[in-house]
Amino acid sequence: MKKAHYLILCCLLLFLGCAKETPVENEFLMLKKAGLPIPMKFDFSAIPDLTFPLTACSPIEGKIYLPGKQWLSGTTSYFGNIDATKSYILNTQCDFIDSYNIKEHFTGVIATSTGDNLNFTGWIQIDVSKAISTQSIPVSGEIVVSSGTGVFAGVSGSVSMSGTANYTNGSIGWSGNGSLIYN
Image: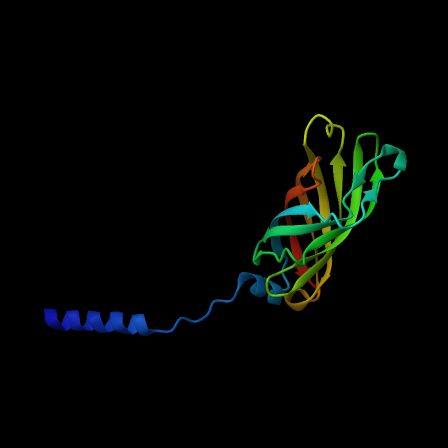
């Protein structure tokens, strides 16, 4: 009787080991198909493209210039590392809000390793009051996703972000949380 139990147990283990797993759909695709908001998180850094002209903040008397283009690198939820050779922001406008804060407006592209893109506009507010005494200054803002290609076709959404800008080399590091929705 013991031999029969061992034989049955061995057969069960053999069948379980040979059974094919059914693929589990990606959570992103499940939420997309259901038309539900998709949580989006990211950690990015941006480094200036020194071949691109600087953007002057207005009024020009403030003598603040920001990088005109920055290359993005980092990670996003669901898609991992972004393609740093195709992801960027272009500064479109920079204005003083008051004596110590500027608001930078930009457009950009976040490209995944599969070639799918998120197109966005956004803004960040930069506190320049401490720029002389420290190399890192706080930034906060929002990205508004307007369209996309590939898996992102028909997407929209927004992501709030915060981080720090390095005053001496023009780089920015920030994290964000928000959601995407498909129309």
